[in-house]
Image 1 (spheres, rainbow, N blue to C red):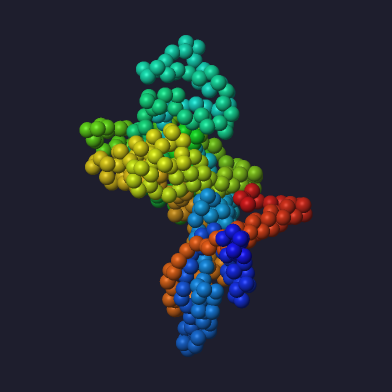
Image 2 (image 1 turned 120 degrees about the horizontal axis):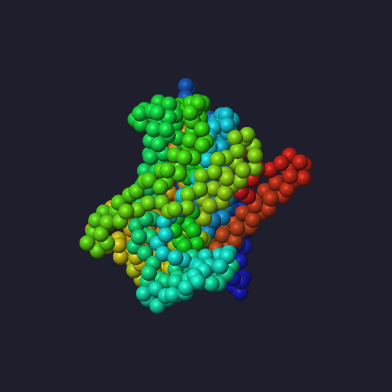
Length: 457
């Protein structure tokens, strides 16, 4: 035993525990979560009329006197099991807003709906994949002596893609500050779309909500150049939301024109500083607004939902555009396992975070995400269902929740998190088995001709 690795010794110790079957049940219930939360406490279900105890659960009878629940981290690099579940929930959340279901009427599939992509502006030329990178007949160099063009053809996965042709010419300050204001830029974009729709319909802008409602779900994605761009599903409903038909003037063409015009129009100004001045921030020139199929169950709707779900589980480190954990010192940036371009952005973020005028932006706290501090996925209230509703539905379907359901009395406390080395090995095996079982089930459904959704694995 002493000659075995620590992980193996720990796994054997766990397997020899008399309560190992129950521990394995808990691990399976969490889906093989890589970093479960440990809770201690009890739940008592009472008859609301008589006060009779209908059910009592206490962790004193559990292995280690604790209950394991999912960490629910969305990042695949942190917890593959929970990120897979989060991706599935995101797929159903977005799909419900496209095709109905989850208490959303199927009539939404016939509403004006767009798949919109908004990009960051250019902060300087970067190397591109695909065709000739940066063709330039006259050659030439920048003021720092570097070529203004690049005649190579880069594969998509080579490290140089997304790197500036000249780091000294690249606007790292503008890049970071654009990230810090991207959420505000989106908010102003949505407001302006509503205003333009009202004006196009001959309505007073302040009364738009009395005639129609603009609903959306959007996800932020890092490009190769480490700049965030936004994918969004945008839908027009009646004033009451998905249960209400939109007015006759609400068409996909009208919505498309409003989206494109607002993307060109909206601006955000940064606070003035002596070091930087004030910047006028806007969306990039590349704006895409594609109407989605109005006949419903076409593959495009499922493809959009799956596309959004795929990116919502990607952390900054997985996309090569930062880290999944905050940095606390300047020295942390130097040792971060990132590209030079990303490290320079992180340093710019840290330096700008030291300016008093930028203190509300909390740039140093968000250095690991290059200044971007918005949620990866956001949606308007009336777009579709919620993550909480999806979790409750899943718990009801499975007959249990992460914490046993309590009608009146609960007493829970946090007592730890994570796994021992042997437990981590066993949990990874459980997660792999569950993923394999899901894959086999999907293949069997496909073989039976019943069809599969395009949702993530």
